[in-house]
Amino acid sequence: MATAATLSNKQKQFLKAQAHSLKPVVLLGANGLTEGVLAEIELALEHHELIKVKVPEPERDLRAQIIATIIAHTGAAQVQVVGKIVVLYKASEAQKIKLPRG
Image (cartoon, rainbow, N blue to C red):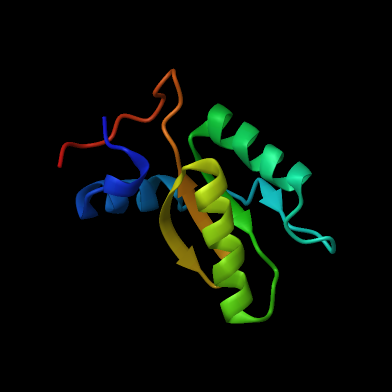
């Protein structure tokens, strides 16, 4: 099983294709990144494994810091960032998504 930090390019491409039709399941609100939002992201990752999170922060550097904090807190892998949407992957106990090898 690939750990969060060790997704190969092939696996990232596969996950990007899987995520294409997804809608963001977590939207950061006016309060930004709170403990409640982090808990919601963890629940969504456990349930879906692959999620999109919308970070509507207009400042690019601050948005990158928020994404880094989410990744550090959840242990998820960043699959891709498109504008204000970040795609995250974290295998659950059930391993619903079968990643291609290497």
